[in-house]
Image (cartoon, rainbow, N blue to C red; front, side, top):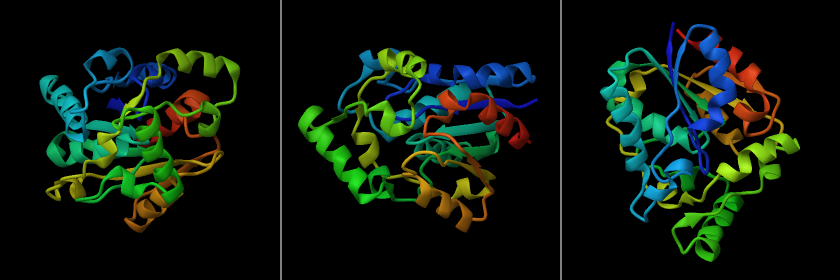
Length: 234
């Protein structure tokens, strides 16, 4: 069976994949879900120097240290930037990368450039006014499509501000990532910030799948997401 490495987006930690990891493991897959430097239970490591390269190194080190092969690398939201760079660094170890409502960046592009203008402005304003110029405060979960109180109660205590630098650092790619197969999963029952990224994926010839849920599919539609990932696994 496959080895999944599940990479969370802004504000979260590896624990956010728990509801997806369980059915994947029950199906026989190995599942790893690291928490990126400076987030959630690793928030004590957060400094203004934490950037995109820091998070790329987190995942590359995990893959290389554990000698993982034929990895299905899944990136949610911001982590689309991370999994793209990781696949470029270690393409021989990645069997498939899956962008879950996530950025589809090119060499030289930063995440801020890929956001709709109104969202990018809101994030920059949040960092300037609430985050000392370098942190983005946690957004309201209702904006992300999380409305069940039990889900809100589970997420809220674990979420932490996200380093804004990770959205300003550009991708640096060699082109090796282009040899790694990719797929896109769009979450359609919210404000669809990543609709443009789904269009990018289609233009690249990637298969694009849809899940009728909010942005936090790993929380609000975990069984459907796990079943889809199981089908996508080589």
